[in-house]
Image (cartoon, rainbow, N blue to C red; front, side, top):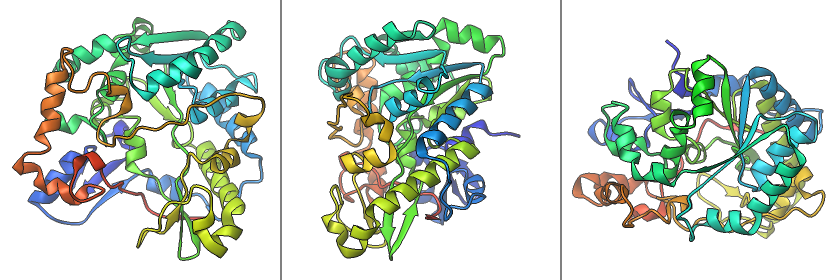
Length: 385
């Protein structure tokens, strides 16, 4: 039997497999034993990470866009106007390859989040210009606020027979649950799926989190970065008939493997000399972690320019303010502990994390004490560059 949800990563503890890190933590409490997060290990280990692909990075992005256009009947590109989604869009449009849709989702009640600020100051204007230039593409704006209000009822209707907490990924973000079920609500998408068409939603996932340890550059996939873009709930319901989430940079294809390997080599070449001399002097360097090594803030400008050179041709603007909270996403800020319908259920789930039967979660928090510090990332196997 094919488990379509596995392609986005899963946890294995003993003989049990789960998509939920909350369930993993509960299983570990009851039966402490070794566990592992798998992210398409066999596929990515079949590639040689030591050899840099000869093509330019932009050529590899083009090949990924071509492959996606060939593989799917209908492509929906989720667009935020940030570094990852803009580079993904350039890979299509610069090469005369077109997604069927460019889609933005937002809440009409949101006046506080970084998403709101990004949309208001930058992205809506970008979206308008794209819409004027590319008439053959559908530009869809989805106000998903009303779906927030019934989020828990939508999950109940799925009959998954799992704790509501287990539906969430690394953060208690309702917006991820809501967007993961949009295929049930957007009539155009529903009709295409009912016709047996192959649909894909394109996510700009993700920049490589390269680390430097024992004089080696090592790449790992991180579960927190995948679960920011897909919930365990969607993995659970994925029967192969609800369309595919395609991580543009981390998806399972030879094209993405080449992109990742090339990105890692570009970063290695750019930072290697300074890393050998004094890593702490690198712009955006994070503090050294015992057993892990050094890493660089992926949003630092030299890092981004190295892997996304096309983004900086011209004078396009980007929003760089990031979320200060780890356990719930900034796109939920307008909804969190509010008077809106459904918020009370979300608040109850959040409060449940502070109960005595959840104290075993503390060992998994970044600071070992507070859920608001977020969870330590689980990492895939090492890929030595």
